[in-house]
Length: 334
Image 1 (cartoon, rainbow, N blue to C red):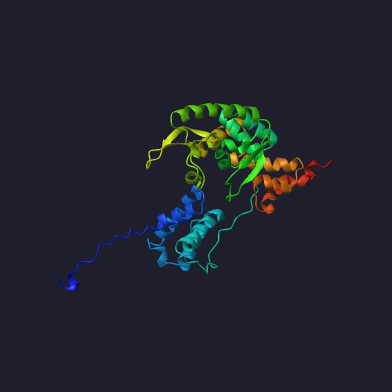
Image 2 (cartoon, one colour; image 1 turned 135 degrees about the vertical axis):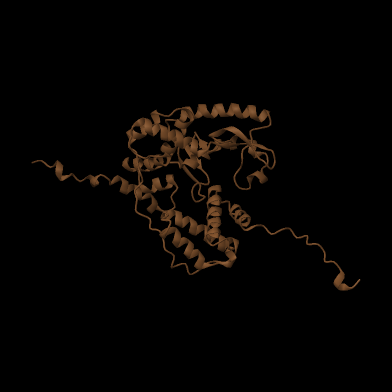
């Protein structure tokens, strides 16, 4: 048989991963949060469709600048939204395609207007808490009493609550940072009773071969049995189990953030307080009320988990609202 007629060996190399799968893999390698992964993949997909489904390897700084500038000038997105898109595309080119971008100075940037955080008074917080019961009351009490973000509260595990030292350990907060914050005394007894009920439920589920929760990072591989241990159970678990479609394994997740947000919104309406407050408003109120009580800004910075004290300083401006203590001329005597 002539050499030209010899059939070539079949190509046994595995197919190259698709671009978005490569993006997901790089994000998960760095242990970014699922919400970051979802946002980055969404922006990269939107960027590709914006340019007629061209592959990003065929594009560069000019196309990125055009896309980001259009977000600001035509779509009128907020500064934070444009910055998120910017970060997603920088990640794509730098970490996935290994092509760091330059020459983005001409990008039209959305302007971030200076805004002060919305804050509830102490009486308004008390009124909201009176309209909550059970787990929602506990969660709102911790968000306000410990300055927790919503997701930080949802992701608390049994081991994170230290009654002896009256503190709460927050892991993988915003920016992947860990910190300790105070455990308020008022909900302690209710929290202990709540944990006792969860323990009983966990014992029953463990006996039935259930009671597994997801673990952060690579802990699941390092400690395969830890997912069923009591210490790693969620402090606020979801009511139902879910089944992994790939393995058939039954897991319990924590409560979804929409559940507490919906109940909080209902409680706000019931108070009659005319403020568009959300669960995150409780965190703002925590910081502001500590400042009002005379605590120093550095202590509050540590409790909130801010990297830069300038982020915490915004609450000093909140204290100055209402004329900075100046008496209105309308109230002057005749």
